[in-house]
Length: 126
Image (cartoon, rainbow, N blue to C red; front, side, top):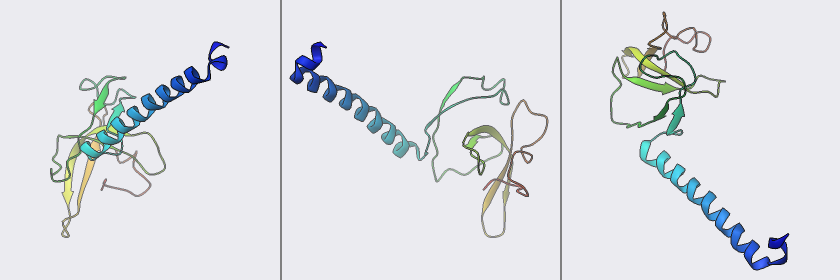
């Protein structure tokens, strides 16, 4: 009620809120640019990577394009038609004759590799 009667104060509060929201968006876009990742921060949702990562852990990603993938590295990937990113370790790296690199992943706490999670007929992640 007080703000409606003081329009200048209401405008000032709205501008402050807008600045906070725009600042958060700018920081997020800056992180996307600096980490070469569409999602620079992810939260671990399952226990598949225990004991390395626990449920609820927050991971800050760094996706350098010139850094080759190696077995043992931890990667974050999405599967077609699923929106939730998966955090698992590279089990094997496969390079075909054209130089295309593909990987097979596995959660540290899982008994088998992730081919059961991939799309139908997919043997490797590209």
